[in-house]
Amino acid sequence: MNNEETENTTRKTIVCPNLNGILGLVSFSTRIPVNRYVSIEEMASSVIIWPYVGFGIGILGALIAYVSHILLGLTTTLTAAIIYAFLIWFTGFNHLDGVMDMGDGLMVHGDAEKRLSVMRDSMVGTGGIATFFIVASLTLAALASVPTEIFIQTIIIMEFVSKFSMITSMVIGRDDTRGIGRLIKSGIDAKVLLILLIINSLIGYLILGIPGVCAVIAAVCTGLYMSHMADKTFGCVTGDIMGASNEIARLVSIIVILIIFNLAI
Image (tube, rainbow, N blue to C red; front, top):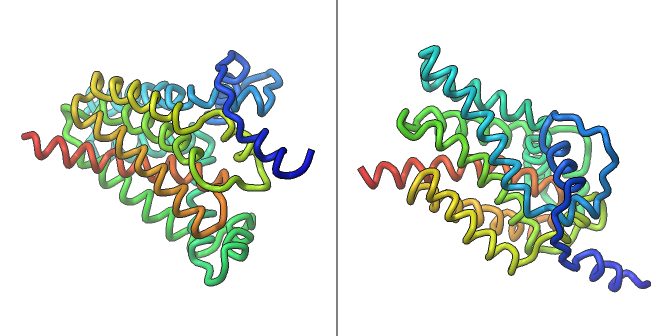
């Protein structure tokens, strides 16, 4: 089998969620240990479940927010910091690593190959640290600005749509020749994405009304933009770009919710 045939086989969409694949996604996305072997193929076939893993993570964050803000009476700002710290810790800092690696790659002057090699370097440079600081500080500021009446719902939505953005970034763009990202991408394509957009928009509406729907749409746009940017800048869509999509879509979704909610008042 030649390289072209291998790539086509890899990109063939296989959507067949199974328990092993779902457990693999939970293990990859959180600190919850899964003591069983999960193949990449099983994870790929269950990729469409990833947003709902994020939904579960969001519920955990919402419970902590309820205890911190409602029961203990801590300020929204302090609660936002606690929630953000919990989320990035509970998800194993995996996606933050993608943000920092992407930031290092974007700082480099040169062609796509040079940028890609820097992004893959295990060392974190100024660009990575600066990008993390920008994303983290804006996320904290945005979350601290969310009104109390929609604070809990926003936490659930932002984690739900951030994972949706991550799998959206898998749909377009050239595959990375290294890493597991290109293998996991085989679990989604444009048709599947459209179906998920309809389903997830309905879930967003049930949780937060129109602002929830707008957050879902914004997450999809973020994922598509990230993959397009990566394709132009790095020559492919890597796992780091997928992780960065998660973190940036969280920020974008909070800002969109704030804008739409304030316009409706």
